[in-house]
Amino acid sequence: MRTQVAIIGAGPAGLLLSHLLHLQGIESIVLESRSREDIEATIRAGVLEQGSMDILTEAGVGERMKKEGALHHGFDLQFDGRRHRIDLTGLTGKAITVYPQHEVIKDLVAARVAAGGQLLFQVTDVVPGGVDGANPYVTFVHNGEAARIDADFVIGCDGFHGVSRPAMPAAGREDCQRIYPFGWFGILVESAPSSDELIYAQHERGFALVSTRTPTVQRLYFQCDPSDKVENWSDDRIWAELHARLEHNDGWKVKEGRIFQKGIIGMRSFVSTPMQSGRLFLAGDSAHIVPPTGAKGMNLAISDVRLLSRGLEQFYRQNRQDLLQSYTADALKRIWRAEYFSWWMTRLMHTFADATPFERQMQRAELDNIVASRQLATALAENYVGAF
Ligand code: RFL
Ligand code: PHB
Image (cartoon, rainbow, N blue to C red; front, side):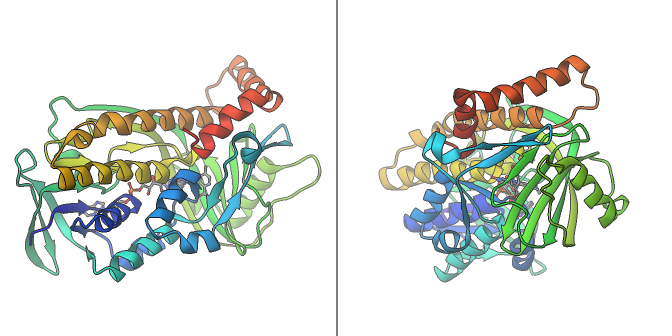
């Protein structure tokens, strides 16, 4: 097989890149280790920044997002049993949309299939090769047969546990990482939303987050031990913990319902540089991870591939490589700001078991400052909506 751009991974990064390239008349093949049903059913992110919505809309895949996604103009910060609204639109003129990542995936897969795009699912043994020369390739196994794609470029969009980052030369590679001493327990609940807007709650028992999915499904999270087991959490224990952490002075209570999905995710900040070696480029979670507190991961994946698609377009249209050469530096500007914001929100909202009484007071005072100062609340809102 031969194509212009071989893409490893059909997450938001890989699928959107393939679609953006197609719109510029550039051919690609996407290789995905899981099945279409599996990628379309995996529950992950929920929040899209305005800039991500604009990119999806310009790419012609924003129709269902506009109809079914929920536009949110603010969210609540809760601490000491009180809520304080962060008026995103009032402070920044922008909003965010809650639209599940797997719906974005469905829209992108449908667009690729409708355009006759090549998506190969359930491939195994994917190995990028020849990336230091002008003729890179990917070998893999599909339907039990060994296969090879020759391409001009190989793009690793295969997430944090993929094969692309390990295939980059070790010399000159720098991995910056912070692993947090807690995780998030996430549940999906059959019930009407408890709140019209997201609630980020700080509590001495640990952080909790009230989010939504659809008018009949809620997404709730609470800080937990990352090595804990889902089996240790009966539905009753989960509700007791959520009620305790989300307790509100006006008597508001989180709505209960049937819990139909439970999972624990670890939390880390991670950036691997450079994001390019020869003809191999990394985009999205394959190059960087943020803790979910700032809701930035999918948004970063989208902005990475927007940059890459421009670089590839310049290569094919004008035979120039300057945008491809500056890809790492250009992408990192946004990535480090999102890393900073996600780390800051995580530190602000979570309970650190080893915090001293002084550190706890500083955390409380910082929250008080944010809700008392329009300038500080504006900085939070600008970062949250991605107004940079
Ligand atoms: P993905 O989505 O991990 O996709 C990678 C794809 O590559 C495939 N793959 C391979 N394919 C072929 N060969 C191999 N060897 C392969 N190895 C892996 C995988 O099967 C997969 O299909 O990476 P991508 O495209 O970079 O997208 C990143 C986002 O998925 C991620 O950053 C977000 O989900 C993070 N995130 C959030 N981001 C937001 O912007 N807003 C949010 O509200 C938000 N909430 C979240 C989140 C992530 C969460 N979890 C579960 C980690 C909430 C949660 C709970
Ligand atoms: C979600 O709805 O999954 C979600 C919302 C906000 C976050 C993280 C996850 O910060």
